[in-house]
Image (cartoon, rainbow, N blue to C red; front, side, top):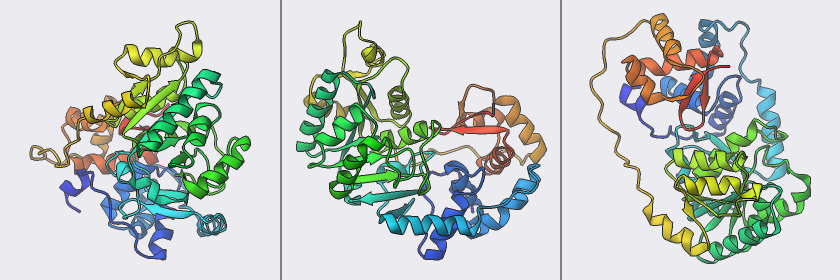
Length: 374
């Protein structure tokens, strides 16, 4: 694998056989292997089978004793559960994987889907907001979802109470995608069981989590990056100053998506986050027309990779680890910034980051950011 391939954002070749898909799942479900590490391992070793073979030795080199890759039985059980739920596996690089996610630094390598995957090929807009929304907030979400749907847009949201529920309900007939924090077969909250069933009939349920996983707090920020990544724009309908919806808006900005917000009364805490977003430059939304008018303003991301200077001489692994740890801190920085700061090549930095991540000394965050592990 060349350094140019290692540093590019081109997706890996998708698995073409059942054995390949099994190995992809097994690698992704192995301890300390997240989306970014998965992608690096695949690039460095050429296949999931080779990466699985190399993983225990890499862990030992990073000081982790007794490391074991994901057992066969765990993947067999997941595939059995998927078959029972009629879930389809979408793999990064395949024709049915959502194009909008391919260029993300932390794109999910695999997604479970229940429903109509054709929804992923249509222009999409995310509507997100408060779980304890006001009646006016829910009414606004329903109106926006209905009008946007009638104009050909699929509505993306997270199947949560409040704004998410209102948006999904209003777009059942025109197209909606529910991105779930837990397994695609685990409905949360339970009160949305009937809504989830209807979405699987006319829309799509989607998740990167293993089948059967009950959502936990740490899963929701990861889920949010998929909501924003799938969408041309993220519209925050109603949100407090500190809420998960603002995380989705932040992800959208990192991904180059448009961020819009519905204003609210200054005395209403449920509108505090929206008003802050508008103060900081988000487009103010009064109707679906405001959203559609804002879409052309999004600047296209160049597809041609930037030219880089010739790489410097190779560094020793131990010295490079020390430089990385010295440069990182609790505040996350971008990987390309780290690359420039320590004057290393992409081919040298990639394996070193994998070693440190397996060792639990660094942490990858959405948007390709790195920080010291807390």
